[in-house]
Length: 188
Image 1 (cartoon, rainbow, N blue to C red):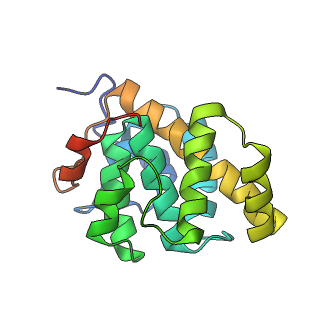
Image 2: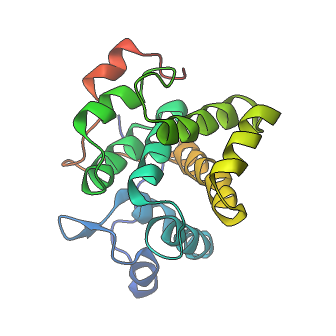
């Protein structure tokens, strides 16, 4: 299937600057090449993503990637899932964890990982947290980290919706869904 919004084929200097250094095979990623059609939005999205991924974040990289992968799975975004399989592997997410992240429930996860996955699951299902989960989260994390945990799934769900609706294609060397996903529902 071809993209609904084609990536910018020949970005100008300003678009290249806004796309930054997220490269694969020496080229800007398709997500940024597509967002380059709206430079003002791209200029605002990149800094928030940078906080989550590179600067001033509170969660460790592995925990963050588990949350992003679970969010991408819930959103049905193969593009986001594939990109974060690559990033997650660099952050210590194992192949076995990639296979398990698409399964419903939190059996087999550590208490800390299970808490974060339950937060993602409940935010996706209800856009809030029940009193019990809220108490667990605020006992385990300080207020700044709680804010990051609450915003992270929403940010990546927003991107997933854009990627899905615009039909942004995965780069050729970006993996797709893990084999385990075929046994789990796309929106468990």
